[in-house]
Image 1 (cartoon, rainbow, N blue to C red):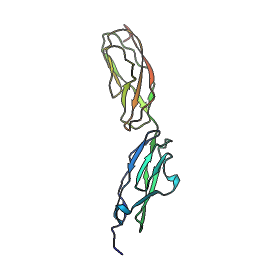
Image 2: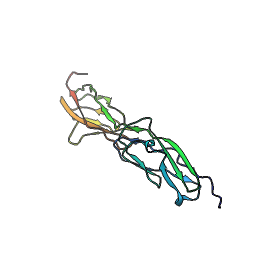
Image 3: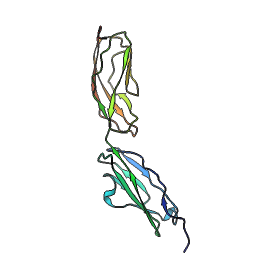
Image 4: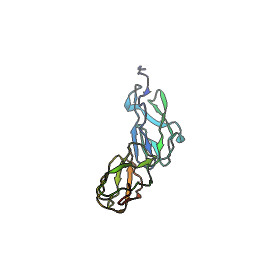
Length: 186
């Protein structure tokens, strides 16, 4: 019989996952009788987060259905001669959410004190956007970092909708906020 190098799983960590968001990564191994002879599987059906599956080529994919910060994925690979298994941490985050906030009022033609919106869940970094057709009071902008800034140019009460996208591309539902620009508020 030929002597083969020891079979080992070389993937160190798995990328984060998010409930409801498509997921795909490939787990790799080295050694053994060669890549063409490898067969991958989950150690048992319950060892993967719900909605994910591992194919025989080592591709872990699907759409996780449930958030679970403590989820793990235990996989094994065999080359027909030896078998190796490894447990991975695979936390599945909840979809990001905008935290509704009381936005401080501003005053026309007075520099607005920047106000930061906040989000929870998902996987930071967050990117903020206005919902299509929605606008802040004239003269103000929303940065991609979630900061309302600028100098309002006219008074009035304005309703607008914002959403946040996390680093995995998971997007929150739009949340409607309101802001008052009125003389003598500061």
